[in-house]
Amino acid sequence: MSAAAFIAGDWGTTNLRLRLYSADGQVLDSREGPGAADSRGRFAEVFDGLTAAWRATAPLPALLCGMAGSTFGWVEAPYLLCPEEIDNVAGSLARARPDVHIVPGMRCANPLGAPDVMRGEETQLLGALALHPALSLGRHLVCMPGTHTKWVALHDGTALEFLTVPTGEIFRLLCDHSVLVRDRDTPIAHQPRDFERGLIEAGKHAGVPLLHRLFQSRSLRLDKQLSAEGAASWMSGLLIGTDCAGALPLFENLGGPVYIVAAAPLAELYAAALARLGRPGIRVPGEDAAFGGLVRIHTALAEA
Image (tube, rainbow, N blue to C red; front, side, top):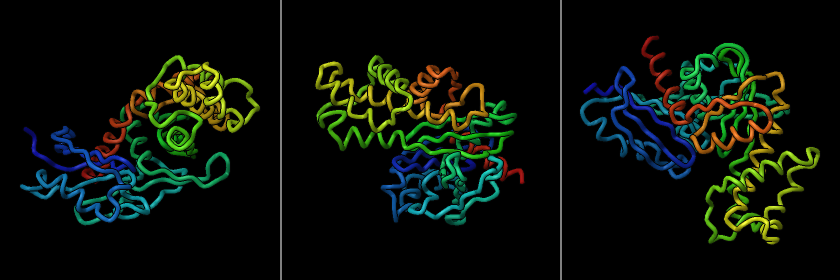
């Protein structure tokens, strides 16, 4: 068995994923733990507890990305100002302690002229470049769905600008804290036909703002046109369809397929929405991209 060489971690807001790697990039072991929101004030304690067995025989360097570098993280990592080559994140790591370094985020003026930021997605972008070398050449649009979806413009491996859309957060808020989508005892389970109906609704009445459509998820349910279980899928279709339809015109100079970096179920939903708008999607597994980026950064540091 290969010897352990370093630890890589994707520390998101709600989840922590850690992997133990050999020098040649083989995964030797993995761990999961609490996200950054539940690790405030005790990042070192959480990290050390989960990795103690790995570090029992020898000290190991660790490389982390995500919200561990946020204002409420282990240590605040800098933001690199776009346009910026994705590979350059390896040169601006923040040091939490001698054996732990954190990847910086990125910031930009987005297509609407407002400030915007990302943390964690820059590492996924780096991994996506490794998984799909074609992304390093020419102009491309990358969609990174999630709680806060990112739409990123790339040119020859440089992040030009990006836009954050809180699609996932709005969906969760509507499901959990309003009467529009469901009663508290109604489970959320994907209903493909109702999701498709939501996508269709998103394509209607192009000039009507999203705010004026949201109540339909309740009125359609009360009118028995939607089941209690189907309303959440309808709302998901409406939100994702609106997200895609609104983002594409803001990046109209970026044609061709859209690279979708996300877990498979969410990537499929965005691919369906983009297909209705005439844009094919190339799916890139989000977890593979995150850890691929961390491995690429470690390799760059080892070769420096």
